[in-house]
Length: 197
Length: 197
Image (tube, rainbow over all chains, first blue to last red; front, side, top):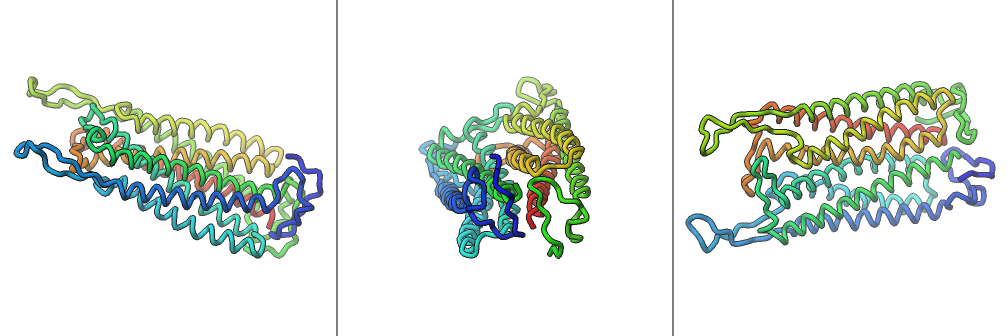
């Protein structure tokens, strides 16, 4: 994206759009894209948390003295990995609300490079947290689905089908949230980059 | 870090250090910091991979027909989570070699903002991959250490102590690598940010 116009830099203030290269997307489009990604992040993290916490399923499991079965529940808080997942995604959800509001407020007085920089910083931390939470929950979900014959860990998804479906959807949505956070960091970095071209 | 000097922007080229604010660290220091972080990333990812692949431990486990015990091995490739971990950390290790060389080569013709931008892009992807790998391996290691009484997954670390020690060290080192990648992304973003102050 080669620029033919002279560079426009006025120490943190945005250049008027007419001065910006015609190849580069205008500031307004970047703002709309940033806002859309943050709203999507809010929706996806909220969905992931809700689907995870509503995954409880109770089944009648036959045991030695009760061949008709004893009601046993599968809940997300039986595994520390899923508790970490809910905590991490809840933080990301709260963060997405704050930055969406911050993004809208900053727009009214034109977005400063300092704000973009701070958003990029916290986005990076959030990305690390959400990606590790997705990995953590995904690993436990995989053992639940397939088991591990080497160490004798039985699969549980043949019994608790609804529970596993919820966990699977939640992990998939959290992976989508990770992709959104990658895009948000790239967008902040690109916005900083295009100002010094 | 308020700058009192006039802003220096010459479209992608670095400003001479004498023109840069005295508060800001000089370009050379940023380059040394970037290079040190990339070398540390190389060392830590290589260490994590080596510690993980050398974790094999064989023990005599008593079974029904052989009360004296049968030799049973615990290996990292018994779990898909650890295989993903080794693959992800190997990619990060290879990437750190490439970017360390790229960083040194770029220094000879002064680091361009375009290169910083591209480094930041791939650093972000690597961060997501390494963080999720650390989460994945950590979750399985935690089940191995503590077990899960709700679903009847037995702990294995009371038997395979050396194996678990290797896994634990490997996960800890990969968390350190994640922190290094966060710092690398922040450094790239900061380098881009300080050019437009």
